[in-house]
Image (cartoon, rainbow, N blue to C red):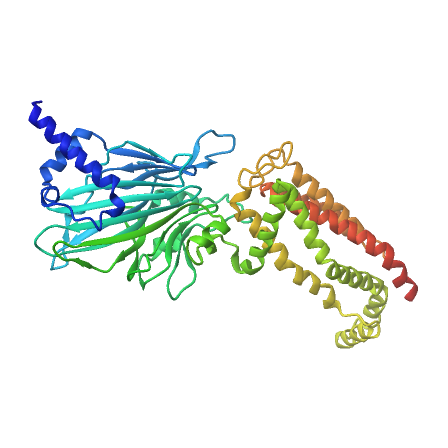
Length: 539
């Protein structure tokens, strides 16, 4: 290569580097005409000289692989989360290969006066001076600018990530140095291949007790939160919603990816299925850039675990993607309490035990009412049996006599069910917390329990839970009448059924039920010992 060509490339490289280093001031900086009119051939020579198609961005939370042909993320790894238990590989959330497609793209679309798409920004070939950008220990923010120049239009796309964050800011700056106005709009998409979704939807062996929601969710200026399962999307792919704030996301059990709508414009949510890929996202209305003018767009991507405290600060109602069901208003404060206990103890298993004890202590008055009603009902069984024999042929008279007996004894049979009904929302809330909280994913307890979100590998917990149910049955048997063979048989059958049913439950859930059952046994024994004798004397 002759000296002139070498000098020419050095000058171009220095100018590009100058623009990158001063990207924050680029919108206010009047670039001289000899820099502005970099033609497409020079841009291609510079890109060929760098000979780079991909770059890597590393922070303390994320590793991003960026394709310079389009400037989008082709792969994203979560550093603090492993692909599988005991695996050394980072969990891959976003990817783009033949086997698995899950992408989050942010692009600029240019149209002409007839609103026809100009393909100038179809996978633009960006360039940047470095192949690896890494957040340094002494810095709190990482900025990675990418440059593209074509037909006197300068496009600067910048990735900005803060330390300790799962939020990726993608800024777009367009400078129009042509003699004609140009019309552009921003288009953000989340893409997932249907082949990666259908196996999950068609799995018949999924335990219904641990099956969690997978699909899309969104929030708009008029709707706080709405979700659609993938199955429904595949059946109906027509969504078009106008909004000036909110977000749209793909969510799964522990992780979510969401584009946050900027507040400075109106946007249109879209959803479609094409080429076996579900595409959801939003695009802006057309924005006109006059000759010599520029436009600035900033978009925000959340890509990471569904952590309540973090997501709530990123966008309103984004934390609703943590699916606590219709009992979210109970589940959220219960999780905050569970999280507070964990911060003090440092073990999620012990935290589950403590919060189970707290809940059972708080609901003890209701449990006491339930047990007393059960005892009184047993005490009345001989009298009810006599009434059934006496009025065997008169059902109406029998019903009236039983009601009179209840009134005389000041007993309401429904009072035995009411405490159970009141407690159920609390227990269901804990259930949803334990199967949807990413904090319990791969969280160890002790000894053989290395993952509270997975089933017990040796099925010891389900067996222990069956034993606790057996003792609950034994304590609850009627001591006032002889048990027949079927009743005795049920004392042994029911614990076995529950043990089999809980074999594939997450061990954190089984632990919760074990502790709850043990507390029930203690409460039953205490109440029966203290109250049973007094009730017996009354009769």
